[in-house]
Amino acid sequence: MNPPEASPAEGQATEKKSFLSRFSPKQQAFLRGKYAASNAATVLVLVIYALLLLSRLIDAAFLSRESEYLSIILLQLMIFPIPAYLYIRLKPHGFAKALRLRKVRLSHLFLLLSAILMLITGCTLLGMLCGMMTAQPSFTLYDTFASVNDGTVGATVRLILAYGLLPAFCEELVFRGILCAEFEKHGILYASVVSAVFFAFLHFDLTALPVYLFSGVLLALLLYVTRSTVAAMLVHLCYNLFGIFIQAGLSGYCKSTGSVGLLVVLLIALLLLSSAFFCGEVSRILRRRARADLLDSPEEISTPGLNRLPAKQWPRALLSAFASPAGIAAAVLWLFGVVVNLVRG
Image (cartoon, rainbow, N blue to C red; front, side, top):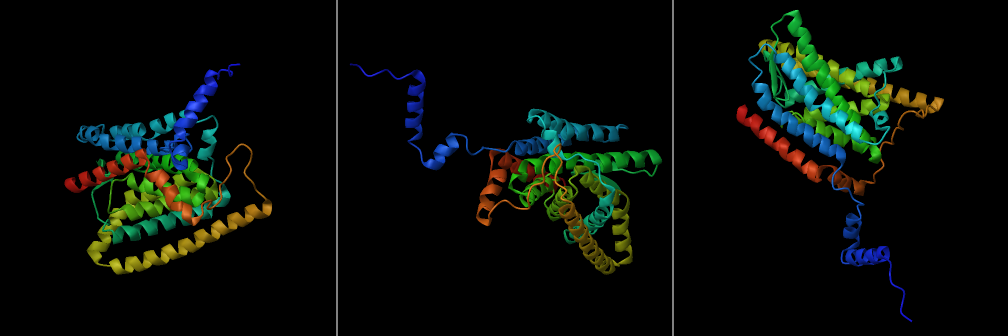
């Protein structure tokens, strides 16, 4: 009696099993798709980096025209919100809730004020250490867009929109909204670190890297405490306004009077004061939630824990974000942008 013939499905399973048996267990897991080659959010970052570098060629054609501010606004919309919108549309239904685009609560007002002061003083001190405090008559964005404020009301409004409001909205939507939502499966700390590094690379400035790392981590922590990306946008906007209207004048005053030491002491005192107040407000908010048992409502995404990774798993988790093909390509683009800035400088 002849043995029964194997079905085509059984034959394919046997063939696949024999094929996989040639590899080690880790290689078999990779072939089965257990390890993703690249996080989709890293691909989004790569696209934004590439568009931003490409915009340098487009921006140069508009600098001498009257539509300078309009070109800056349109280019920013093409670089950030449009890829972000397409990314969100490609995600499963309900991903938009993970962006935490919620209104800011009035009870978080003092937290936001302390975060603004902490961001301004911390970034100013780091900027001074990095040699960034220069009084310039023009304003630059990502070392790509450049504008000059002629003092008129119209130019001031356009400057606020193009260099204050729009960058705050675009950057927070991508780096605190999308990236934190995608990387928070390992906890708040991991999401804050990864999003801050990608945010720092966005500016293609090796000297200012500590400044953007500090601001990225602080804004991410603010996002999770308030459960609102809009809160991070408001704090980011206030810092941008400080950079537009105050920072250059402050730098010029210090250079003309020679009172840099006094400024440093004042900034350190304000940083320590705002940090203590910020930590106190964070503690108050978390205690209030614990007492009232304020869990996440059903219509919003849950808040992750602080850290879900053992110490020995951190290197592997970071490699999965930065050593993926898209992560490596993004790092290459960042190095290219840094070199271009050095050559141009």
